[in-house]
Image (cartoon, rainbow over all chains, first blue to last red; front, top):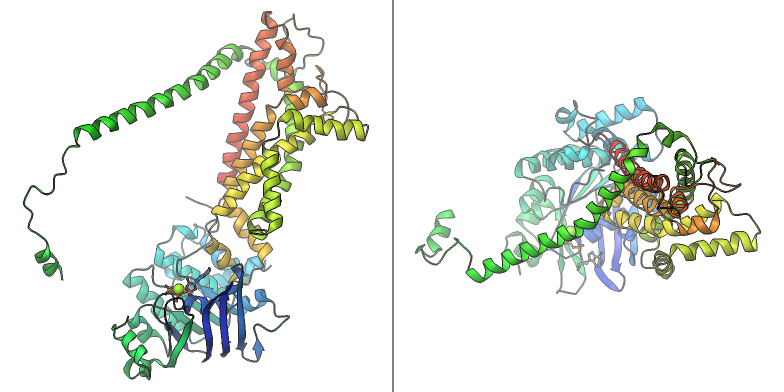
Length: 258
Length: 307
Ligand SMILES: Nc1ncnc2c1ncn2[C@@H]1O[C@H](COP(=O)(O)OP(=O)(O)OP(=O)(O)O)[C@@H](O)[C@H]1O
Ligand SMILES: [Mg+2]
């Protein structure tokens, strides 16, 4: 499990609009990589290219290479559906399936892909809920609707759903931005635990969070409004936060930005 | 923090903030608008209550008679009492069922195409435009169209199935449009959540999008059915009225509630015929109501344990 991602020369477009320009980076397996940067600089856009989710938007396209170990995700003949089975995603707003119970939500990835074996499903659901630190809170009401949980619980449910399909990589786009500090801590603890098994990439606006959970930090910025976003620098989180190479990074981190 | 904020605020002098009472002119306009709106609502209610009252008070008598639900009008002339509406109820239900079986899948698949696959494409715009036109087609035109194809071109007889075909043309746009609206209400985040699990698009639509919109889709189907069950022109043109029980939509004339009303209407001055007209009208209303209740139950129980 867990794979290395190597991106080179990636440009991302919405129709004619170039949102992200010339990004190259390496994301290490079994580590947490944080993306930080001002709003609108293309963090979400770039993140979504890592599991080919970008292309569900009409007119959206990508140039460049994203290698997952030895495989180029954008090579011709690669099926985006297969890519997403390997690279899972957790979204900013918790989005459990409203028609499904807690159990079915976690099992949905397997069930929708044709797994019927009840014993296996039960086992995976329990393991995933444990993995998402949610088991104790929901074990007595697995048949209740997932939408009936609190926001923080829903987000952990979504994480359980994502890890239930056993991906190699988990992408998280501001997973805590809709949550209170306690739920946020719960998720941060969880991320710490997830990196034993998965490669985790997380977008966050919270500097402390990036400093707390990540091993590597990548700082994105816009040259000017209307210009595409770029990767300014990337390095070990300790170094980025204590001694960045670029002035822009330092300004952003210390809040002297714009 | 809080202290600095408080210090910066101007002291409350007791005058700048007056939150009590409205100014006279605004209060007057507010009252006027409320009265007008309530009045309009009541006026709109008058015909509805009136119709319901008339139909119920004049029609309920026969409905209490068991024969109404089990007998046909066989051998009963307009001048005589007796017989029931079984033949017409069954006719209406059979034709509506066939209509639904044909129209609903086409409408739902069409709506799925428009929302999930065709968005923004030229083909979708053309289809959408056609649906708009179809929405405006009067029932008699739909009936004449089917007459021209079914009877004139193919040489088939006037039968219940032909009625269903024309009703499909009327039901399709209603169900398609309402389904389309319901599918649009399903947030993209749910679709993306499903894609992110490596679920293909078609399966996402089938197992996530449609179930989420299911209650609304069913409501649309019921609205379509209600519209279609009261249509009279297609019945008059495409199948003759029969007083006998005929459950075969491919052969022979067939009774239906609207045409039963139309039959007895010709002798409305006679009490037995008038009674049957009102009873048949009430039966039609009840059928639609029943279908509505059924649909709500289906929609409720199809949701997983939503408490
Ligand atoms: N669906 C879309 N269609 C067209 N342009 C888009 C779309 N989504 C985002 N953009 C544009 O792409 C650029 C990058 O947006 P993106 O959402 O990736 O920024 P972000 O860094 O994630 O911002 P935030 O921190 O606010 O989430 C912005 O200029 C935005 O307007
Ligand atoms: Mg974003």
